[in-house]
Image (cartoon, rainbow, N blue to C red):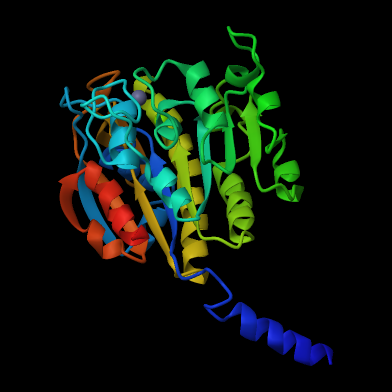
Length: 348
Ligand code: MG
Ligand code: ZN
């Protein structure tokens, strides 16, 4: 009798009429400030290998914003999340001053569950591009308020202070009735809540070299387990936020350690897509930071050395890596806004 129940269960679970698994999952990974030199340096420093070698399709993305050849993370985040070029510093609003729906919001409208992971605060420009509409990326408290009203179901990131230590004295977390908030990855894993946030820090999380927890691969594994256990398909954005901060600091070791953290998470995502082929995985950067050039190094241990041309961003095109459902669309050279429209085509 038990055997018959099992067989029935597998027949029903595998039947598309009973499972909404026909719509593909999307995993979108952004290495902030991660140009080709950062990838190259990170690959060499990692024993001449990177998880990015496992991808099928590679393209190049033009990162300029509406008003500057050199974008910031708000304009480039908006381009990739919402498909519109805007001014540097602006999140989720187009040049006609209209709110632009993000791929996360569009997916949610189609019944998707959604997740965000960042190794910065969750209200920082890159993750905010997926749920917020503000004229300045610095309006952290307003961005936090907008997260509370957003379609985001699961998140992992820092920046709790923007929700609980505010100028308006509101406690936004108290207002988010449907959400559960935790402070450890083990609690995140154990929770059965359908709306769940893990704050990894009151402020900005530490660099990984100074002991940031959790590692991005662990955060991603926990998030994928969570999203995978939901009956609906999912959209997930994962950001290696601090590769950019290593570039701003002109600190190659900071870049290498943060890239390694990001690269390990990419390996987890690749592993997931092997088991769940009805998924699109895209990995790219919002822009390059620092104008890093690798001008010397040690061939025996692949230790790279390099220099920087700026403490800001540069206008170099950045690579796009794709695998899975719809990945072929990402071959070629295109504007960063096309990263959004190609994902949207996959959703449609
Ligand atoms: Mg960022
Ligand atoms: Zn930056």
